[in-house]
Image (cartoon, rainbow, N blue to C red; front, side, top):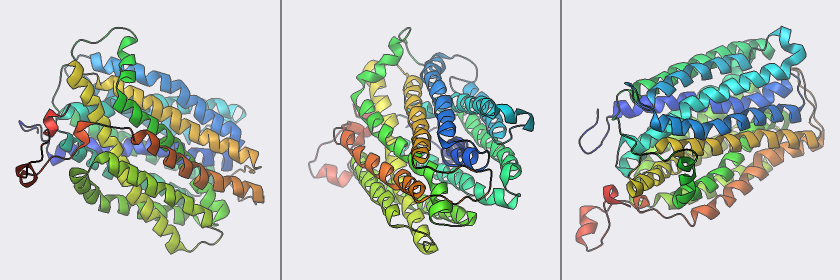
Length: 459
């Protein structure tokens, strides 16, 4: 499966990448579906629903860095990562099934059931995602090959987004309300488990690397603060993830309450975005081999910020072709954002390994997971507070006319907040420097007298 120069087979990359169908399903359930489900189906106040989402994620965020250190030091016949992937698959699936199927007996204590379900989802996601994110940096020593690995991940991220994006339409076909969401919850749980087990199978076939001597106690976690390139990416990611969570938490409210679109429009929008991401991925990979990934990352941020700003021009009965065009552009730009950002992360992690001789990918993955969880949790909380402040009316599965100020709150969440945050995320990227980010020279350019280090020798 692995050649002497650390090139990986397409089958192994695909099997690993399929795991992202599971992770993005869990993330999208949290960011796209749950705030709407809790307020418009279960009848919770927006601020309470957002607070539950934030609280569960924050509790689990503390667990993520600890798990990263544990997986780095783990010893067993299945390697450092596979056992956690296996456990995470089933815990995540159980949590997804629980959240959409609160028993009637718990209606008097509905927030308690929801909180238990959310923590179950979060713990399962961490068990899987922390070792999963640690793997690319140790699967190969070639930065270009890591970009290829991540391209497979982004493709399956799009597939996962497509599956979750058609859930509102599926719920309608299943009868709507709690019954429709309950059946959909079991379907999504099965998707999560199957996808994550694919990555588990891939982990059993990848190379196993020794961790080296690890610092004791909390010292092992403080090393991330000394890795400047990694911290700059993290600073950019905080802005982007909060912006993304704000956008995804608001888009269902936008479609139903502002654009007055049927459930099928959400599915069409996600299909357009998925087609764009998959079809443009070879272009992004090609560009990543010829230009600085940092520069491409910045360009994608600017394009995405402009796109989210365009929702301010949308109104009731927006033409479907225009909505689909936004979806297509969203998929194309977010594909570049994800690929370049996710490709630079293992490069920055590997830079630490080359300097220190210690493999601590799990610690870095745990730190990133902490940031991801806290940021993605803050988005729904922020939107819940905005909707509450602008007098959004919750309901029990029935359409409710919203006041004009509530529509203003939706516009703020879906357009203004993400556009500003994506633009701000460019600032730390302007200071990012990493030799591995520079594309390798072709023989013709090298013969012309331009010197450059090979990707394998970077750092």
